[in-house]
Image 1 (cartoon, protein in one colour):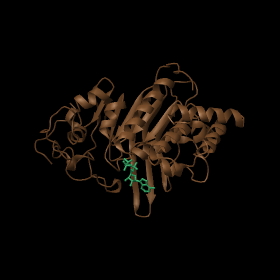
Image 2: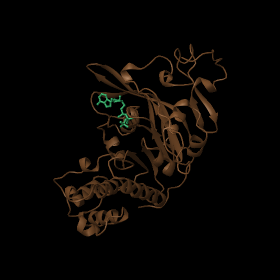
Image 3: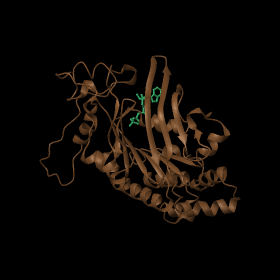
Image 4: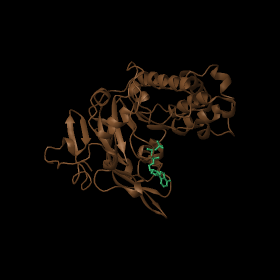
Length: 347
Ligand SMILES: Nc1ncnc2c1ncn2[C@@H]1O[C@H](COP(=O)(O)OP(=O)(O)OP(=O)(O)O)[C@@H](O)[C@H]1O
């Protein structure tokens, strides 16, 4: 694996107004509804939010992996926008040669279920060698050596022997290490991790998070990390993107988001998590109601029916603007919009 990459100006990935929809028989699902975010070089950006808010579909859109009957219908996904020849991944045919070269080569993805992602029919070694040879011009012996080295780097004991193992002979944590090795096979500039530790026990989760941090420190790759676990976010994020019902409601640096959350949804999310050192009598709140289905989106601010700060006649009428609330920070809420004169009363 190479040392840290040169630090060019500008982000590595820039998503601008991404819209991804599923055209189902029951109607159109606006799973991702105008998402903008960027991933700086060498940084970890965590995307958080409750189940169904569009985190996975955003991540899958980047690599052209949206399931049928889904489709990107708007926006841009600029890969290396600061370089001379940026690519709009949203406009690329998911099956094109260029997308296949980027997917697994420059951008890799690790999914939630490692067991399901590995083939039970082939040894982990052969799957790793195949991933390497798909993108790198290496012979069998060289690819084999690189595979053993990758297994060693992800902390698999006796990597030579494990090359011949099948996924069902390994624990969930070991399988996830193999998946990470496969994802790193070609030294990607960006690793997209979609809830990579959710299916694992707590101790194994912590080990995998440590591993990802170490690997990132060694290689200088960027990470786009999808999770609903704010403990994980606190540990690995540089920047946080909070999503609700297909939109980004707040984004900013991890410290600012945790210590000074602006959006009522971010505050509610943080209020539902126990804090270390806050004592056993800390009061946890739950967010009232549930996330509506994206095909049944409320008018106005999508969060207003669950929001304690919602302003009648404002939040239920129009989409809130994305307001700058500090350097590199935005919140999509009228509370911060000086142009909006909130009427009195709560919806
Ligand atoms: N193949 C599909 N067909 C129809 N709707 C889909 C499909 N895949 C996802 N969706 C819908 O898109 C919305 C966003 O889903 P997504 O998986 O991105 O949410 P998420 O935030 O990642 O949730 P989770 O944390 O549960 O994975 C959901 O309402 C989901 O039902």
